[in-house]
Image (cartoon, rainbow, N blue to C red):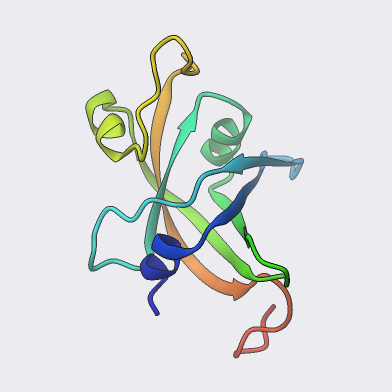
Length: 133
């Protein structure tokens, strides 16, 4: 199963961890990653607001995404990520969104479509097949 297929079917909760230039860590709830190229399983994107997580990846491109499935056991994925680029085109960001939010309810901060290279994929708990967890 590809990473794209996994995230198309898995239900759960995601957390994106970033750190600033001094190494101070921040963690925030994030939706499942977007895969914008059906043939590319190693590039993901997140829609980010102009807040601390985005500030952090601008000075330190390394991040980690932890996804916990809705299951009785501890099942999920850990992704090691590196920021590679971003886009600020509102139309492109809106096209990527999985849901439409009403303007009155939506967070009005500036949005960024931030692309990350997937450097490593590990299970939520335990050791991956290469023994690098």
